[in-house]
Length: 193
Image (cartoon, rainbow, N blue to C red; front, side, top):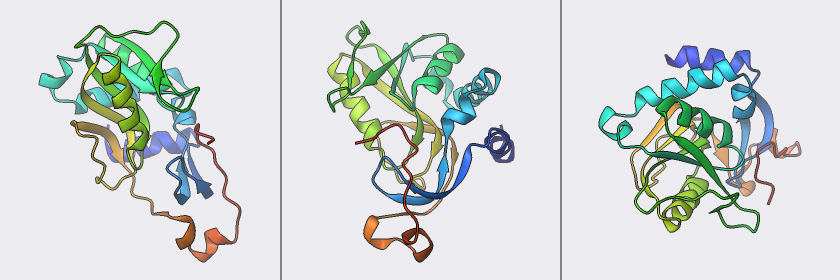
């Protein structure tokens, strides 16, 4: 998929929001990408997953034995990536504040894992998910996402394959531009703490 085709999918799903948003990273933005809306249509989700799969080099793709994604945001794209790659997909969640496998999910020691997210901004959730996957015995060999909001700066310590980069500015609470400072932030993401 070209960048214009990907943007057209976001627009068609009304998944590119404008306003004042508090991101899960703690930073503020005038734009929010609601990947849940983008992925709510199964055909679109499958198309997005296939496009991401094609960005992963064949030598890495052929090693992947399982896809693991952080809940909530990574659930749909993680599942679709599992389907696209022909492997199982599971997720880590943090009911007590720390990611871990639950619901009977388990990894055999050394299982080659693709960690899959919807949106990466600072990489914090991704690094936390990788730590949990490795603690469960997985060998995380690559990561992917629908969107990289880091400006290409994120370092997950492994090869990272986003479908598209969006470089909307983000701001710390004490550096908000006037137009954002005048409105209350909405937190539309999955992490509420």
